[in-house]
Image (tube, rainbow over all chains, first blue to last red):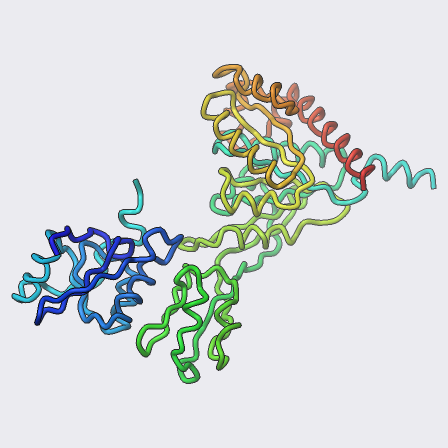
Length: 111
Length: 302
């Protein structure tokens, strides 16, 4: 919970699933970190299948955004700080839902 | 009968495909490919030029063909009938590119990511997925004086470069010398463009950059078991390392084009070297002679 939020959604190392009522959490390791392509889409599916209702992340591209939207998962971009801080901001209603993707595909994959 | 043997000796009896590739960009692939095609056509030989640099074809600037027909280059992508779909998710499981995904009650397709393997429509248990044609490029054919001209052009916003190259190469003719202008680099489009060539001419420049990328390109053609040789363009600049490397590796250097300002001037005005600088005709004659001898050796083995 004290880890920093990854600035990238599709290739984030882990997804921390937080129950905002109890603040219980579980961790899913992201198998798409080094995917050849379509990491955002597969990550969005992983998250949606886990029953998550909202994604808090730094940046999210168009393919992941489309997949999350199709699954009815809400998206909040521009989130930083620790996972705990992000969850608290969300609970207090201070985050605004993203209107769409905030970056292009492959954002943050170049070294 | 005698006549026929003579013809077989002097003409290309079966198809012979030369791929002009590089590794490093801007070394002179198009310069050499277009001039070679033009030179060979001038001998009265049947020759075709195929521009497989479909992301930025430019051979037409020099050969100035009359385009007389065109075709669309298409690929198959999945189209899902949601009426039939049971959202079992098997399509998404088989896709290695995330091009089709089943989330909740939805199936989404991402045409840009699809590689047209056909896996999704094969595994669908209720036949809810059909192959739909997606236009990714255009193939144009014509004549540039006596040269049969073909080039492909990838449509803006698409990434299916190898598919368009494959469709350009479908036009390779028999009984003809086919010169393929290959895109730069050593990635999938290059592999597709040099695949099945009888000979690959690797064009480089005598600089550390040229040598570095030449080594990568040599690694690729060796892996693919393709006969190859090297041409050095802008000879005189840089250093001797390309020549030293080729000598050490026992690689033929079949052509050297000097760093001549007049060549650059001809290029910049869309003219062919063999037309405006007749002293360089000999270099293309020697290159063609090398190719003919190689072809004879390959035919003997056949």
